[in-house]
Image (cartoon, rainbow, N blue to C red; front, side):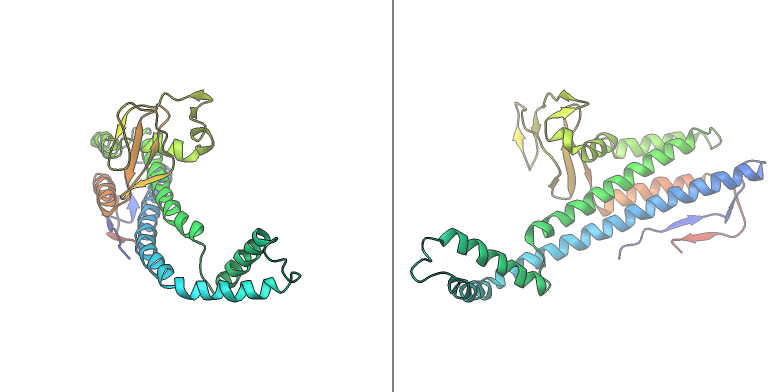
Length: 261
């Protein structure tokens, strides 16, 4: 597991003279740190699934001969259910039964359907995206109190610069029922030109939903452009740097604290 560490210069916030306000802010900062570690966990799940997927499809190819033999055996058994010489007339029905029995057999032995396996990595990529989006919203709300050092505003700007498509991409990922229709807020999207290693559409007109371009999770945004967020160690390093600098700028008291616990 890849762990992104943080250090607090104390175990209690001492930002203002009001102890109750310090306590409130400390809780909010604790939640921000918790969201950071949610992104950390999501990245590990994503990287683990990326590795597991390669092994999964390799194993599935190796199972091909055994699967073919199992299907032959199931077909012989199922064909006995039909009157003699009537198997051809019921060819499609027999095929359906063979396929159904075959899948139930291998699933009972722990094999995962390829459709479900394929979706796992996208689920982890979206979890990473949502964690980053929650971090951005929580950080912005914290800074609105106006209590923290002026330099913290530049840290928020740095966050947006590092993840420019974050909010719009999260909205598209959360509202796929609209994006699939090519809509945003019930209005048709004007699909803009796009050119990357996934799609080349210099004249626009291409709608992209829930995609992975390498380690970049992306899709069509509400304004018709394409946006993405990289699910990577590099992205976590950027987030870690911003959060650590924010923590370092605050006033603390008590013993230093190393995170995660």
